[in-house]
Image 1 (cartoon, helix red, strand yellow):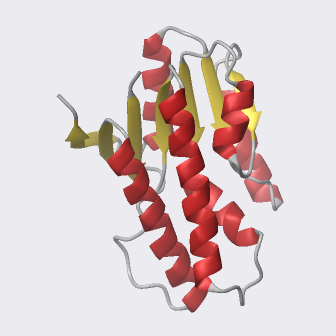
Image 2: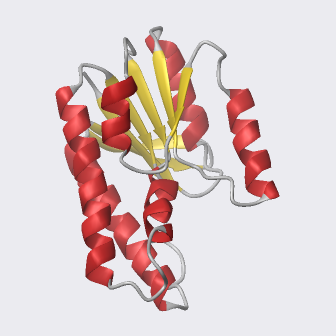
Length: 181
């Protein structure tokens, strides 16, 4: 079992590389999509992602409790792609109102990522996890955006500690950040 975290900016090639790695595995693939179609533009993005995946892959569309859903639906998949943690954390934020206590949001994010890590630990499948690196830009101008950036950063750190390999995608090129020997 091997686990990989792909991080980087928007449109850096993370999803494309995740799909290429899964195709190279040659086995059954479970694709876990975390996006919610909140508007027409997002619906078009989701549809474009669906069209880019091989028809033989099983797609699981879930917005939270990803680890539990994978455990119930993994079947005989040898590779699991989770695309993406960025939207997963956003989905957690959507469960709370804008005045929610930061510690409650943090507990929810940490619980979600721990559940995912436990799923990885119990599975014999390879995992490829896609996330965005949002901490490289300007400091967000509002409290909720700063909290989102901070909690996604925490989620990414938790996953990076757990997985075997981490790659930072830059202009479509993977830069090795962590590789277990």
